[in-house]
Length: 92
Image (cartoon, rainbow, N blue to C red):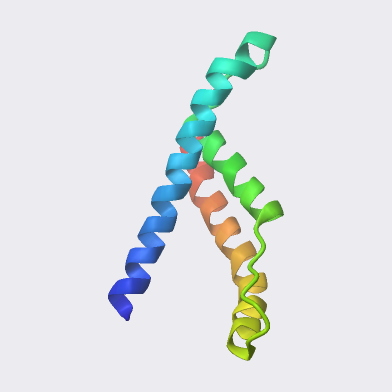
């Protein structure tokens, strides 16, 4: 079980980095031509974390166990966003 949870954490971090890279490229291709300043990779990951913070919703259903997970996700997600933001601000 520990290996699975470690794998999921690494997978989530990898997906976050991939989203940051995609946002960086899209910003370079489509936003800069309108006169906006370029952003760094760390900025793009930070924007993804902000987007995740405002848009993530866990809907596990009506099961009692899923309701418990939903309660914990409401607490843990902001803390993860804060942690990722704290780490990536040092790369700016």
